[in-house]
Length: 307
Image (cartoon, rainbow, N blue to C red; front, side, top):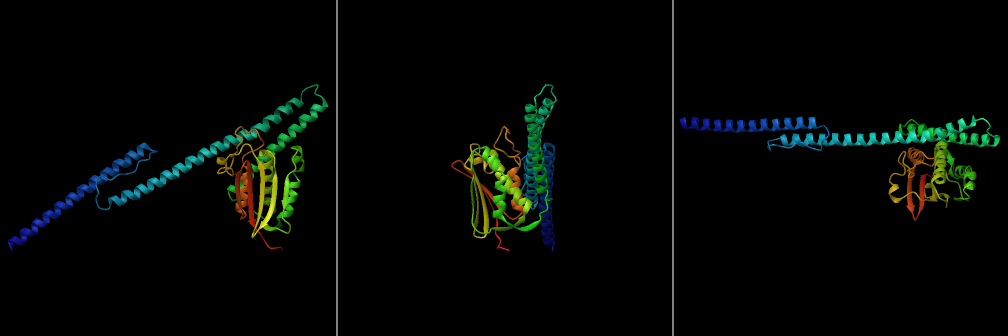
C-alpha cells in the first residue's frame, strides 16, 4: 500500500512541476507581450508586429489575432494618410484655380478705373472680366456638384430620354468654339431611336463635360459618335492629344487630376470626375483609352425599347 502512496505522490509532484513550469512559461510570454506592446505604443507608427517568446499553448493564436488587428489598424492609418494628402493637394489645386481668374478679373477692373482709357479698350477689358467671372462661376459649379455627388446628395429625376437628340443638340451648342479653332468635328449618330432612362440635366452635363474636355485638352481630330450596340447606347468622344500619356489613363477620372501640370488651361480636373460619378450613379459605364495619339472616352448606358 505504501508503494501506491509513494507512486501517487511522485506523480503529483511531477504534475505540479509541469504545471509550475508551464505557468512560468505563460508568465514569461505575457511579460514579453506586455513589453512589446509598450514598445509599440511608444514608437507610434511602426511596421513591427508582436513576436512569441515561447511556443506556449494558445498564446500563439492570441498573438496571431493581435497581429491581424495591428495590420488592420496600419492599413487604416495608411489609407487615412493618403486621403489627407489627397485633400491637402486638392485644397491647393482649388485655391490656385479660383485665385487665377479672380486675380485676372481684379486686375482688369482696376485698369477700367484708369483715366483716359479709350472706349475700345474699356470694351475689351469688360469682356475679359466677364470671361474670367464666367470661368470662376463654372469652376465653383463643378466643385459644388462634385461635392454633392461624392456625398450621395444629388437627386435624379428619372425619365426616358432620346439619347440621339440630346447628343446632337448638345454638340451644336459648341459650334462657335469649334469654328474658333478652325475645326469641323466629325459627328455620327446611328439611325433610329436610342432611348435611355436617366436624369436629363445629368445626362446633358455628361455630354457637355465630354465636349469641353475635348476642346480644352484636344489638338484636333474631334469625333463624336453615338451608336446602339445590342442592349446598350454607346457614346464615343475622341480627339488628338499631345499631353495625355498611357500612364495617365489610370488616374484620368480622379478628382482634380489634370495632365496640364502648369494648370494654365481653363480646367479644374473635375470635369471627367463628374462624368464618372454621374455615369456610375445612373447605371452607366465609362472608360478611357489612348491609341496612337488619339484619346478616346466611351460612355454607355442600358438601352430601352421605344416607349
